[in-house]
Length: 264
Length: 264
Image 1 (cartoon, chains in turn purple, brown):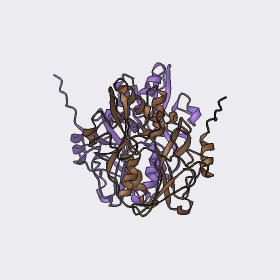
Image 2: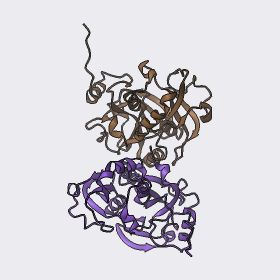
Image 3: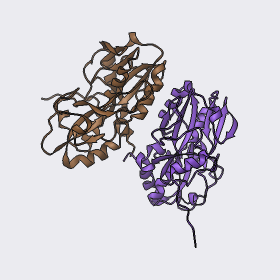
Image 4: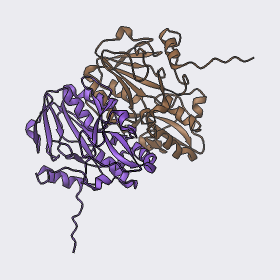
């Protein structure tokens, strides 16, 4: 006799995480709900960072900003606490990573502003629901991610190259993938490039800068989307005195269904 | 023999305006090009205002932000000068309008940040191009605009009711109007309400708070969009020590074709 574990709700998962009962990566958890990147910066950098995101909406889609003095993202997850409800965090000081921790309560200060940015984990679900295969997800792999020669638009102290993720798409599905993902500007939106890695400065698809190698099969086209690593990379380059982020793959799980972010 | 004046380019129009040869409202000028609202605030309020816009993208779609120290919107109109290239401006001090002027050079300071927000003048063109009638435009009327009981999401010192504009739409075209406008989140996007003025606190369509009365004919449905007056109203309520804006109907004409803002 097989037993099946009932899928856990986003709130149940955040509760497990807060109590130290889950500290693993989050892909595949709470399917259909938005997961987000987290970037936390001191208030004096908040305008520059928000403007950087506004100018680069494909890699940096802002879904919610939690103002200084609060730790609760009221739009995405009422009652959640951004200091404890992600499985792992990174702590940066002056652009150097100084710690990976399970919660950030001891680092918290009242002048910190939290930015929640759309993540491709929710995005890929839109493709799965549209019947478009994303085989590397089933294999438990992370998206291969590359630093490109595409420059982002600078804002204040923030600038840097665009980082992209790549998914192999069957040639016959490319148009439909553009249509499907365009509906979700809050989750990276339309592809930034289709087809030629060298044109955006990627010399070898088999050597991603982050993530796993994913095989490009005959009849598949490499399609590239802006990646949420971009704003973190820009922020780290500017060496803010303090920055807190999620650790790669350990995202914030929200109560928002991804379909609610569709613009059409 | 009839003579026809060749349509002027956005750059030619800005040049006329800068030289004092055009100080009238801008609807219908440079058809097909984006026109924007202008709001200029001191840098210490810039984060709160940008966040207010991020939280309320339907009434407050930010297209470009020009940082303190610059007057040139490089994305929308290279070489333009926001101090001289709009036909009329309003000057507010502590929430009170103190002057209407043709240029704002004498009021300019290096700590001012300029926000350019999408405007329905460009938006309506999308309907015209989709073959959907907007008869009050042909009659030279401004959109009727109403203060609603819908509350915007506050950010920092900014809060207030949503202001909406209304266009009568033939019942058979309502779906297509939603589709067409949803493609342009940068120009107010999808309607915020369809059909029942009382449900959003509008008691009498024939008594708009701003703009002209537009007749609702048999078989037409009132359709409501977020309006660019919203962020100005919120900003004025907060009584910033200084704020500069365009004067109603006297918008900034950009070099950007509206189609370039389509997300799908």
